[in-house]
Length: 290
Image 1 (cartoon, helix red, strand yellow):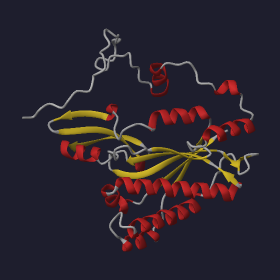
Image 2 (image 1 turned 135 degrees about the vertical axis):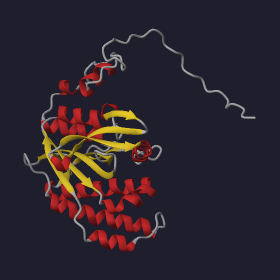
Image 3 (image 1 turned 60 degrees about the vertical axis):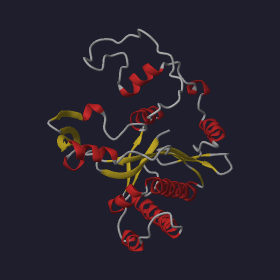
């Protein structure tokens, strides 16, 4: 069974409002996408689709770019849980229709937030946004569950910039590498003043406790134990193949990300060994500042 990869992007005109009210606007984004995909699943398949949604807030140059990556199994579980309804090999939902419904749902939720006094009113902005085309992009489907796991392992808990993209830090400036999507995905470098680099990096700090990976439909946390078991039964999955491998966290990280925890992070040649284990730090009263 394959997995589809659909990306929902918010218009940049909303960036200022989002940065001022991250928790509220991100929650609205998740809700609008969830309702859109579940509605399309009901109409097209007569069943419930499964969704894993991952929030990303950046582009390659660390600017604010708010979007959800959605991983969706290629089919749906019927409402009575008696059938698995497969999708076509290379088609899930029409992206133009997804875009229109997503836009309508998000803006309706946004207006509700305005009316409830959760965020400042901006009725003119809503009218403007209703006239714009919103971007929903369907990427090439994933070929297997293993590919999905590899993707999740690389991207679900990453920050806006990994260390290997920092080319140079010198004279109050930071040079980083990026891929220019508008120029054939060519690799380039960008140099920023330290203050601007820090400003861009901090744009992507999430509110405390905010969950940037969420599951909906038959993958929802409250019901997935039962629904996934039923999906596997309907698909004839071999239970033995579903057991987690006896693999250490170190080996798992190496396989998924290529990062070897035993390799010295400084010289990249030497092997690190455990010489001592420090006892856990016990909680102690705060220092007296007087």
